[in-house]
Length: 71
Image (tube, rainbow, N blue to C red; front, side, top):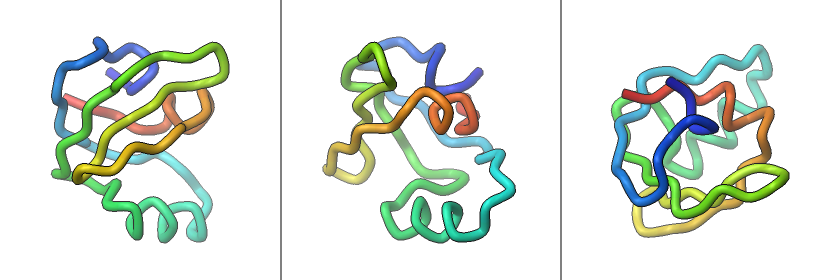
């Protein structure tokens, strides 16, 4: 399942991030978004979703939300 399909308010564990962009991978890692980390979808928006990672909130667009696989 990916973040786009996640239920709001439920905590998930990031299983994998499917992107070919090394710069984007490094940026997500700096935010604390990497395999094994806990993530919660706060709300779904028309263009993406708001997520909570390590007590911080970020707005993630739909394309990136589909690339973040969760369990």
